Amino acid sequence: MFANRILKTLPLAATAACLATSPAVAAAGNGPAVFQTWRPGAQAITYDVKAVPPGATAQVEFSSTGHNLWVRLDVTGLVPGRAYGAHMHVADCGEDPKAAGPHYQHQHDPAASKEKPSADPRYANPANEIWLDFTADARGAAVVSREQRWMFADEQMPRSLVLHAETTRTGPGVAGTAGARVGCLKLPFGYGHAGSSRPQPPTDTERDHGGDRT
Image 1 (cartoon, one colour):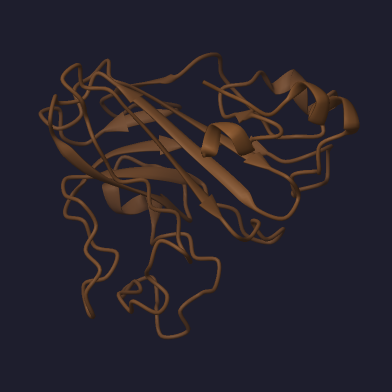
Image 2 (image 1 turned 120 degrees about the horizontal axis):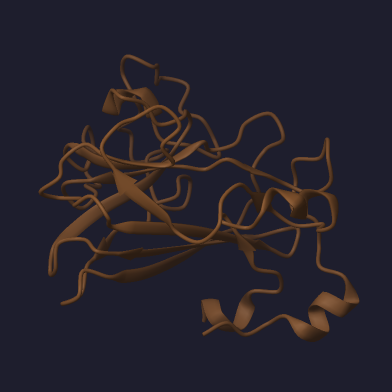
């Protein structure tokens, strides 16, 4: 279970000051990001107000033992009962939904390009990318988590999480596609101490006091 395996919780919404004191992830902001229509500096953007109503929220958390990566997404205020696709992307959110670029891949598809993103199931799959598809409950909320058996590379980090209008397809030629981009959440995190990008293994104290999360 995800809740029993987190040794160090790494909230996207931790304060930036944590960079100086925590060996784990820290990021700007306090609490979940609130979706709004585009404006410069917005952390969460809605491109379709019917699918992602302004005022909906999202928060991403990362955890790691130094070998595997855990990712958790919490959302509120979305359309009750609606299914969404959700993937991590390589670039920042922008006014144009295409600004976030293609999916983040642990092993990059050599046949893919910016103009033609990967749709090969050998690369566009939930083991090589980070897919967090979910269905909102009767209150428009959802929590979804995934474990990846790899770490982010120092030279490439995901920069955004994109919400899609449909759940993710898996077939040849369409793998990883999930319809229109309806929302985007910036991921302005930094790992470890200044100058380090990798999450650090938890200390003995963190192991003693970490672990379960409800």
